[in-house]
Image 1 (tube, rainbow, N blue to C red):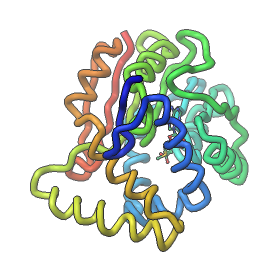
Image 2 (cartoon, rainbow, N blue to C red; image 1 turned 90 degrees about the vertical axis):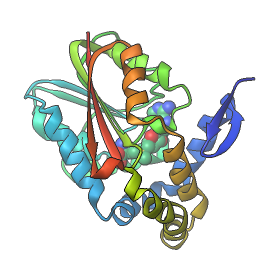
Image 3 (tube, protein in one colour; image 1 turned 180 degrees about the vertical axis):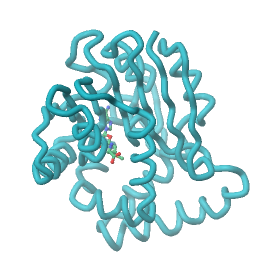
Image 4 (cartoon, rainbow, N blue to C red; image 1 turned 45 degrees about the vertical axis):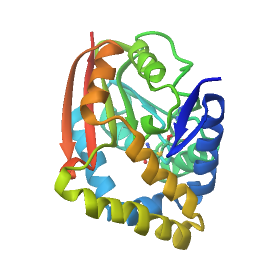
Length: 243
Ligand SMILES: C[S@@+](CC[C@H](N)C(=O)[O-])C[C@H]1O[C@@H](n2cnc3c(N)ncnc32)[C@H](O)[C@@H]1O
């Protein structure tokens, strides 16, 4: 049996998806309020930056993977207009339902698909843009997921990976204190769950750094990959072009 990591723990590969599901089942109800609190609202700026870089045009077809409560899907839906398409997806039913409700509340009715990014139920080359916001870190076989993202993109299409990354050295101490002391407490007070927020901090530390992720995307067949480092390395946006 192959091993992988779930935060700092080594687990069987076959167990990781179930454990990740447990985390998001537990936090789904308080996900958005916790996102605002934990990032002091910065997640909105990171997402807005990704949407600006994506620069989608009317009529384009966008696939939002690990779309959760739908922030990116909503932003893209407004930009592609009625002639375009945004498909909102996630592996977790609770997160997807919350996302669908929030989208509907904003007057947006999008196709919503429960699916694993490692096995996408879409044909080859059917999207102009694929996005994954703060989702890749949770996937068991990142190479497999990246290969799937490439497969469903048309040649010249782009993949945007918005994800936590490695902070600049001078910020490390403060960031570690915040991640391992403040975050789990916030999680306990607001969401009644310290463990899921400890997992969040640990999973960020286990995620490949920006240079490694760039090589993984190149390996997966993205001919050109740009990296945008945001907020001192707290987050990185990788933009890959499918050859
Ligand atoms: C931190 S949330 C991000 C949600 C949203 N994209 C955002 O930026 O607010 C991570 C999401 O990844 C989803 N996820 C984890 N593993 C996945 C997989 N293998 N395929 C698709 N989604 C996955 C989780 O269910 C969760 O909704």
